Length: 353
Image (tube, rainbow, N blue to C red; front, top):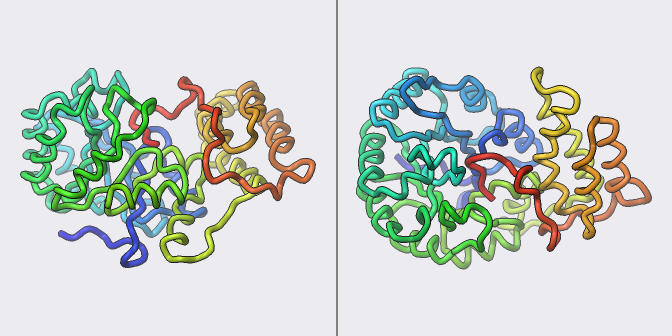
């Protein structure tokens, strides 16, 4: 079954990387406002002996309202439970464009269970899982993976298995699981995969701007780009790529636009179980990335991390983003060098940059 076409025929695909606790229904809708990618991928459904289809992920599939195809992602290694979960998704007639297998999550609490990136240690188990899912899935079957667990030892063997089981699309984050997000991205592996695979390959890892995205496409010859944490910092990044590919003027957001985006984020992250300081602390997970483009000395990040209320956060955002004529200042295309998101404030497992 052919994959859904890119929004504009002939352009490379853009795809939203699945990010646990980030690519929720409200965030997908927010991207729909700022410029949705061609393809969406959900947070992962956890698959184990007692698992069910998590309602909040089902809601993101059914109600994202972006008009874009969405793929439901699974994480697990139990063959009967994977088969059962696929059947549950198909029996529920969830409007997915396909089902995706997570073989890349670098969170230790995940890979220690031999799921996500942990699968990459055992090609024989990968073979079993891919065979099970290919037989169970009546539609499109896609895979997201890294280049290996702690080395590239099994990289070519696993690409062979992906071809053997007729996977329809491969999204490749070109780091090992143990490298997490710390190392440089090894784009040569994406190029190797794109050159040899029958299915399209999406390039994932440090696609931080239109300029970087075009460089990655030129370097890897991939069919498109999968973007994760960079769209938290810059929700216009998919729109910008689409404009660039079409040869149109590329939208340049200002710090004033970023201030409005933060207000939208506050609404999107609101939850009945998340009030007061708990809501503000949850917001900091997003603002750690937004702040990478605000000021070279990192004062916004420093002050934001100490906010304890919406009122305090408003004052800090106004001071750095709109007061004293800053609202018209262009928001930089790339993160400011030297600024980093705190490791303990980064998005949780399954996140992709």
